[in-house]
Figure 1 (cartoon, rainbow, N blue to C red):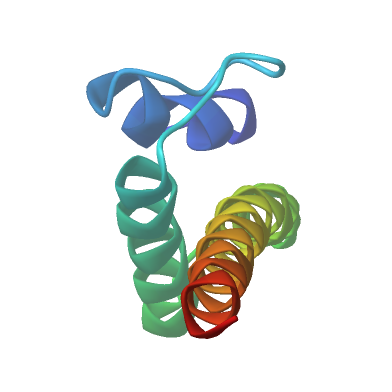
Figure 2: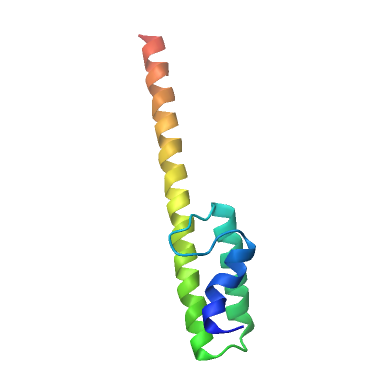
Length: 90
């Protein structure tokens, strides 16, 4: 696999991977796991390792964005629930 294929091969199999194309959390997480596995296994050239690392950073950012969005939604739902509970007591 060439260094240009590294960033897209697994992502294409997962249904995503082009820059700007939205990946779901699970897709990004699964590809990130595969990237880490490949980096830990070694046997890649420096160029390939750098490409994998960069892809891993992109995937980690996608996961972080999804998790931050989920946290905001959860916080909003809890705040709404607290507000409703407060109105019921009044």
